Amino acid sequence: MTLAGLGGRTTIDQVMPSVAAALGVPEFANSLALPEAPRYVVFLVDGLGLELLREHADAAPFLSSLRNVEDVVCGVPSTTATSLTSLGTGLLAGTHGMVGYTSRVPGSGQRLNSLKWDQPVDPLLWQPHRTVLEHMQDAGVAASSVNDAKFADSGLTLCSQRGVPFHGISSIWERLDVVVEVVESAPRAMTYAYESRLDHTGHAKGCTSEEWRTMLTTIDAELADLREELPRDTVLLVTADHGMIDLPMEGRFDIDSSATLLDDVTLLAGEARFRHVYTRTGAAPDVAARWQAELGDRALVRTQDGIEDWFGPIAADVRGRIGDVVVAALGDFAMFSSREFGIELKMTGFHGSISEAELRIPVLVAP
Image (cartoon, rainbow, N blue to C red; front, side, top):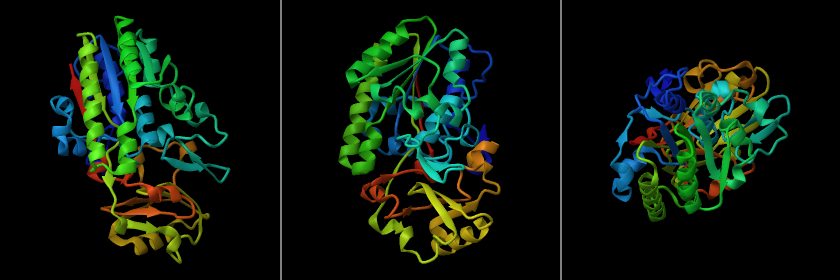
């Protein structure tokens, strides 16, 4: 599916179905024109935006040498939980229901953190759709996931990669060995692997920091080693869930400092670059008007009318999770709440919104 609101570009939900088609699974279409092969490894580097990779190409010689499938974006919001579930299910957020880093649990008034999974919500009911990995396995492909052992039964894993063997690892070197062993274990295989250190470094130090560049170089070398160790008939595909920007202090707006923005607002969710704003019944148009007047050209403020160009078709049981008003930060700007989300103020790098730097992701093919 493409999003007209994002220029009709292809979104991350098409990556795994294209891999399935390249592996010969008949129910999927290879919309990305990936090379046919009996075995694939899809390796996601959290936070590796395409613009960042190109800006720091000298720090990642292996990745920069690979062919990229051009003009792929992660979708909206540009955040990990949403993108990983889109990748895993082949669906957009309005259908799979992981609509942000945090979102409202309808009927409870509570906020679900989709990474910590801190509410009593069954992941299999929250995201009821089968994963593409499950469909591959049904078609005779040995599908599996390799990730940090602590994520084995997390809510996000169950929403995005469930239904196939999960191989928990405890070190980077163990990951290389396990990925290779799993791929070699079957003549038709698809293995998903995940890397988080670049995103963590970006949030803490900034994606323009020397620490970030050093981590990029480290991961680049590890992926080059993985490519060397994989069987020759295996395609390595490297992608990401979002990009990132560094946010100057002058661009940090505290919602709690406004006299009017929280009028008729019952709950805030999302993250600093993309806020879900939940309102009293019937108050959404007035709240949206106040937010737009206050924020001006620093943000794009929308009600739920017509937001399918961001979220895709919105299922009835998902609509209540999305803010009655959604606010996407523009430029070097973000919306904080010192009372609700104080930890965000300590970060340097951010994502979640609709800038090219946050949306554009690589789809790198190492045949």
